[in-house]
Length: 411
Image 1 (cartoon, rainbow, N blue to C red):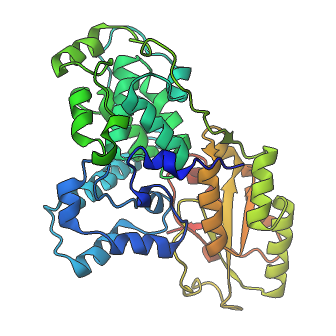
Image 2: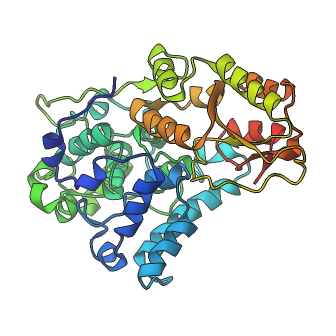
């Protein structure tokens, strides 16, 4: 069951209300876009209680696109290439560009350049005290509490977490990146993993470091005490931190006993809890039921055009023009696709699956769940149209990137 943290506990961290809950709908995204004031964003974006957009979950899952957001903001505000908001849009596009032009989609999951910072080894797993938000470093523990309670973190909090894990605790960046990705509503392999590499200096010329003074500067004004990290491992000068990053082993958690947070379980595709939620949202029990639905539609409406909708392509669907090869019918069948094999290595939290499946149910006629082999067998259904009449938005996600073009024309 989804753990609902009491709102007053999150309020105590100074987290703005609009960053505590994310409704998985196009209307909710439009409301966030309408509230953007570029000048306020530019002045306050670095603060944890600043005027950030909170659009990242909607962008990651394709509910809105960057061009649409930019156009809607520019309709009400002057927006130039020198605006900080545009800079942030540019960073997101840059990460996607790097991913798209990598030799293989999974290349970003490995060091983009050799690391020569710390001569010792980095731990392949995240220590329990970090996973439980029990390090004794307030800014780290507060970030973990917010992550588990909301599925969201301000970019500064993400960088603090990454820097602490890598440079002070000597955890390999990949272990931290995978953990954060699993719990974020906006977990995007390119933005998330390349950002961790940027902090680690495997995708930058130097490590990203922060200290207690940096935390004090950007912590929420009304709740700064919850984040204040004086007299902890991060209360050093940048010169001292650089020496620790290069020469010192794991500094360990702060002395004493610290309250621990229970890490929300990650849902694996074939777990009973996931399947129960999938059934409730999708209205079907398993892939066979979806196939029966699809087969019935195709038999009743020969010539139906098909759109395959992945978790990263959940935009609003105006009725499209039928594919040119469709002749017998102008009907469309939109099938939500969840490839079990692709998610086995990168499971998500219940919170994220709830966000994705609820939105997918809004824009699709049916949601199909199955293996890669089952996916290819869809083409064997009676009346399944030619590949030219099956559309899908291209995806770089491992698993989806290989499977989609085998039965669909990519857009």
